[in-house]
Amino acid sequence: MITLLQAATASQPSMWPTIIMMVVLFAIIYFFMIRPQQKKQKEIQKFRDSLTVGKEVITIGGLHGTIKNLTDTTVTLKVATGVDLVFERSAISPAGTTMEQQA
Image (tube, rainbow, N blue to C red; front, side, top):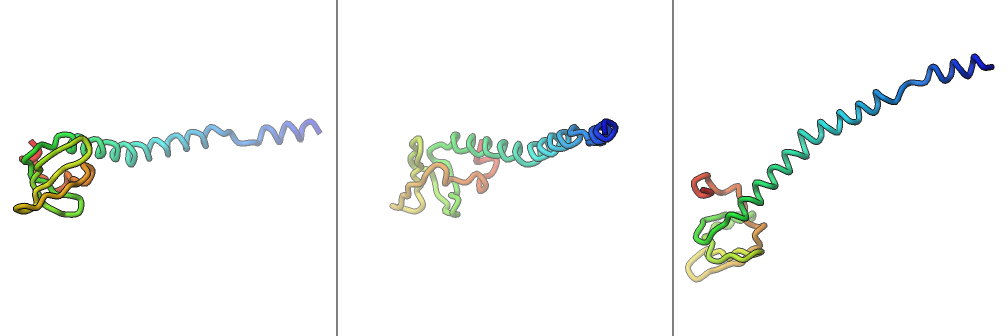
């Protein structure tokens, strides 16, 4: 009877390979998915914080305009003569700007 219990406890697999695999999987997900997304979000926020009056921008809806007024949360765009539209800062897309415009 004692030999059966010893054989049963000796044949149980270790949990270490499973734990190591979980850690490796999390590291892969972090470095290939989470970290690049966080970096991209920081760059977008930096762009939106650097907006200035007179800069030509594109909204996420594709509307082109020139910044006429800025507040902490909104941007007023001049899209045509006599036409001013107010947008949230988050609606300004960094994808439509060139490196010269960002500088």
